[in-house]
Amino acid sequence: MILSGLKIREEIQRGTIHIEPFREKQLNPNSYNLRLHDELLVYSDDLLDVKKPNAYEILRIPPEGIVLKPGTLYLGRTMEFTRTEKFVPMLEGRSSMGRLGLFVHVTAGFGDVGFAGFWTLEIHAVQPIRIYAGIEVCQIYYHTIYGDYETYSQGKYQNNSGIQPSLSWKDFQ
Image 1 (tube, helix red, strand yellow):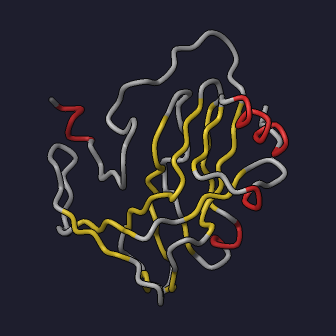
Image 2: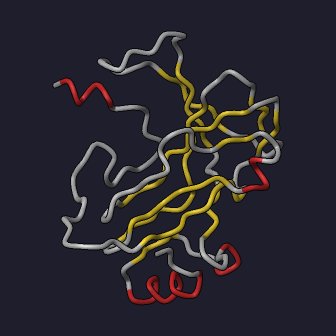
Image 3: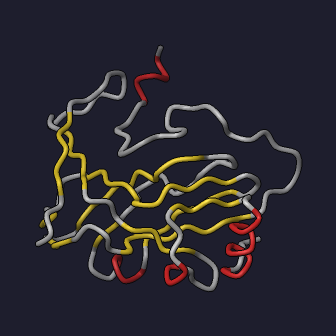
């Protein structure tokens, strides 16, 4: 089942869900809006290789915004750090952004129980669009989990401190 917004707030108060910083106005009936940080990562090479680290550059979103171009994958991150103790976190784009042709996760909207970190966003624009740091760009919601489970505590992306490029190359070591 999906937690209601009231249940999300209750679990934050209990300490089983952490959203830092938490702002009440971002809480929805069954999700919480997450905001876009002011940096983006763009790969430098046209050809990417899953077996090796790929070169990239960091772009800053200035106060006047930045125009995203179609055909480019931008990796961003949330301003909020989240952690769960007993729920499955899920990430979805917001319809307001999708209606502008801005997709914020291409494949990675599924989290693990115990994930702690900033969410790396796989941003793709259908047509040129100006975006700004701090916009509510996606939403997180929580599922209950059925059965015994092991909490995710170690992994390539656990306890990250910023945008995470693909670390798929580590799977080949």
